Image (cartoon, rainbow, N blue to C red):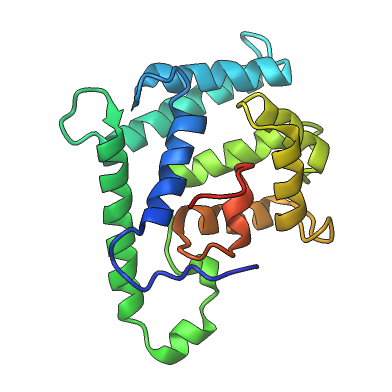
Length: 215
């Protein structure tokens, strides 16, 4: 991997906040009203089914619906502080601040030897709803279903979220190490963990949303 998690402080840095807010606005808040609600996840469900050609009533259509109901329920349990059925920007960042601080404390209790032996992408766990979401994102990109994301698939899907072809291809070259690294599910999970956790601008996972700069 190209960087480390770099979590030397329990608070989120501005760099980390910029990444998390980019994810919030680009991939979660699909109706662009500034808050996450069930209808955003229903739009996401419709989007993946339309992109993949899954018709109403098919097994994949129904499994996708169940998945998004589960993701929304778990996310709202974690982040919706006032139980109004919405997750605002502030609530989103507070949730991540909490996860970040918990991971920082857990890491601080490890010995130096344990820290050296620990794989950096496993340094902080991700919430269960996000693990399911990451698997959904991988399957969304992997349009041929061959277990590997290629640059054309990556560019095509990100284009549907408003990312330019040029930026998508540039980012893919970076995290695939100039196409030398296969983007399978395991590697995509590592990249995703870096995206959500790393405070290192050189971490390869920073580029999996098709954005080149978060400064």
